Image (tube, rainbow, N blue to C red; front, side):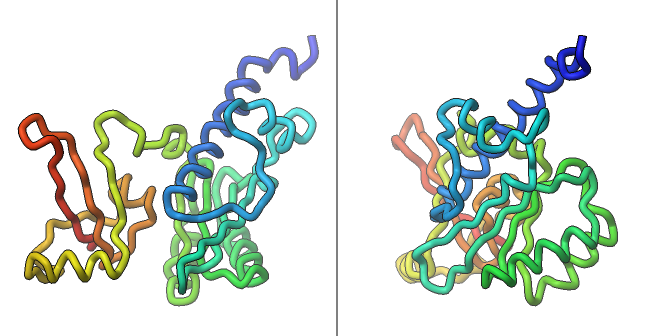
Length: 216
């Protein structure tokens, strides 16, 4: 029996796992209002994903990298990097930022397998004035959290929608309930401090119940 054959169940599980992660990332970018510039496969079944990203007996994470754009004014080109290393360190992060500069981007997302090293975290913080680098553990993207039956609908307000909301109810930012940037749904939408999200829940009495939260 070949080595690949002996590892077949493990191999199939890993490539299916990466397919699910990639699909969630594409959905996340779409939900943020981005259009993906990179050529990507159809994702209704895993077959085309495997065809495009298989290199020999493994999925090539580096080839899964994405470039995304939006029509919104002042929004940056967004690059998504899938790390082939178990732990992402300084060298990889600097390589990512070099690629971002080449695309005229200051906004990136790093998808990591196990961890980002302590020195890597320090570099991300040091570069925060020039680059906005988000990070997600692969396990956090196995499912799209916004599709869970218990997660209500979230809509990130534009600056104009936020202004109208505050004026209509004579509110200040500080009077709104809070949501932390580390909240899983806030991370999914890439919420930044000062942004407001509209949350719509089903209600047995009112049909629907709407609340607003300020990212702080």
